[in-house]
Image 1 (cartoon, rainbow, N blue to C red):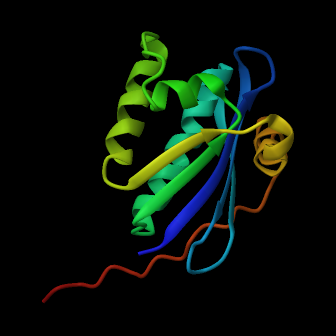
Image 2: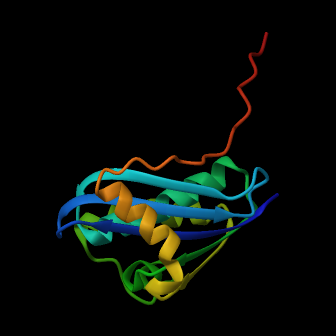
Image 3: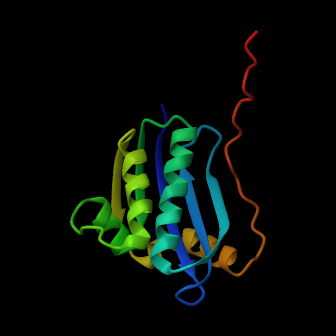
Amino acid sequence: MPQLVAYVDGGSLGNPGPSGIGVVIDGAEGGRMKIAKWVGRQDNNVAEYLALLEALQCAVLLKAGALHVYSDSEVVVKQMIGEYACRSPRLYSLHWICRKLARGLEFSISHVRRENNAEANGLAGAAARGVFVRNSMPTLPAPHATP
């Protein structure tokens, strides 16, 4: 089972405004993955959670045994480790889904300074601006039909 490391970032142009996420995952069998997605009109914290959710979903799809996430969002990191309670109605469901997915993995998350998260930040910014960025997603085997 792969042990993955993900750098995640979400951002918006305005708060709320056009938003994007950037995710960089190392340790996947097929090599480094980069994901940039436009996620609609959101605020910064929602975009940050959507980036974490994307990394968690990729880890599940890749059947990872462990995922360590680096994020420059102090709010997301402290809520995920339980240092801050998540009381925001707009974040609660995203937080709950992320915690549920994380329970299926050996999961950890750490805060990283923005300058140490430049690649994910650039992907998120490009996605928020609507700049096309080629996503590098894992190639999953086709489902087998059962007779």
